[in-house]
Length: 193
Image (cartoon, rainbow, N blue to C red; front, side):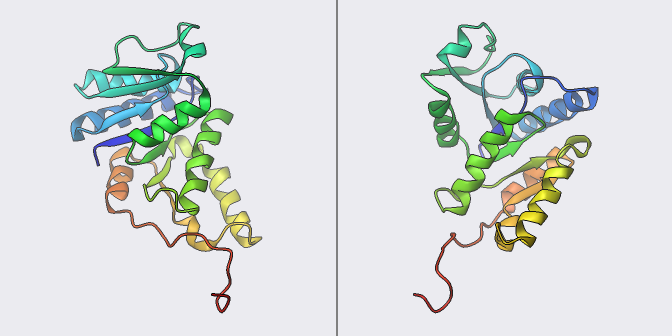
């Protein structure tokens, strides 16, 4: 794996544990020679993970819409900063550049990014690994909700395995390297083909 898109918050969170987890991920990416692809911000968990990759001698590509760059929150020391016209273009560019998608703690924007690539994977639009670095149990309630979705038959059981989860960045990257996606989603039942 040569590049990973990281979705995460532009806030730092309520506890130092989130920044610590972002730094550990950044260190791991730099040590493994994996390029970080992310939203291009200098603040919050986003800025923390980028700073850690850069401090470790790694490569960081930021993708940011022009209207956010004008607010002066873009990171000024990245390997590359790509300015796009819209949030839609940002996500498309990140997906194009990344060989996997990792989600750290964040808010609604982070969730929206995760759910888009998760949905794309179910539809067979990509076969890249994706998952959660579950720092401080942040995603435990969401993972429980995934179980509820499956129980209520709004999420196929086989797709639960698409969302890889670990509390350790290195172990999660190892899971990414061995990931085998399930078959593409179909709305046909056996016997309808």
